[in-house]
Length: 82
Image 1: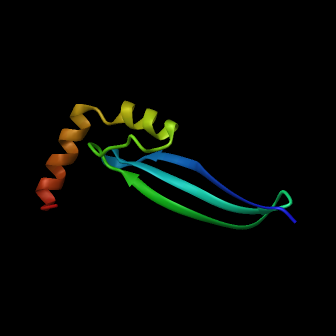
Image 2: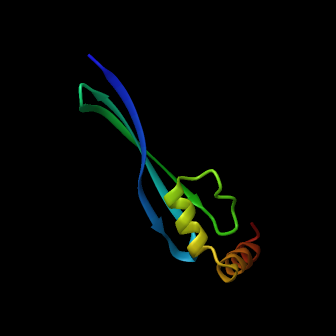
């Protein structure tokens, strides 16, 4: 019986306002068959440091988080009092 834990970014979405939503799947495998799994989501907001993200997430953030998108996001956050 060989157990293996596999963690992979399996979904990347650009949401309204320029946020990049990232879903990470964790699967516990036994002899090649998944016996358990879970998901975790987080959002990379425009202007946030994304240097520690998966390479694909970094590429999407670099393309989407333009200076205009970052400024609009920051203005919206200031309006909301965040």
